[in-house]
Length: 185
Image 1 (cartoon, rainbow, N blue to C red):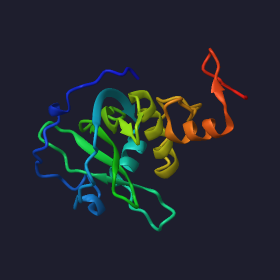
Image 2: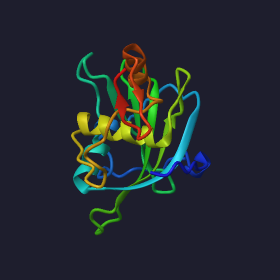
Image 3: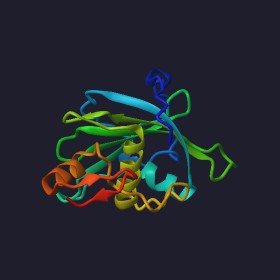
């Protein structure tokens, strides 16, 4: 989970014809989200199981107002990468994009999320690559029921930079101690 930023220009936006095995029909018509204001991209190289890849490439369309996230999948580009866009459902504001290199035929369990793009400035709060990765894992485990076996199960949502926890912690006057643990006032 290094914070190695990469040039987002490596992702070729030119699309090629997609075969029916790679993307569900519900997602073949991609409607773009609102662009990120301050996107940042970083390498990830997270191996994804075939079961998780099947869930990711299906995307997710909210059923009602209680579903707060939407996942849309773009067709494969010339470099072989499929991008999964994750946005808030009510506003269509994109927060994350996962750049996935699918497994080659006959090579099971080799699909990789090769990079992540995220909104690094959320209402004035800087979001690190590590925090963006945690948020994607937590949200995707919840909504798509992906396991992400190669990622720790004991993720904590807390980060001193995270907007939700930051507001709660200010309200309750909680702080981090030297070891990074929350301490009561």
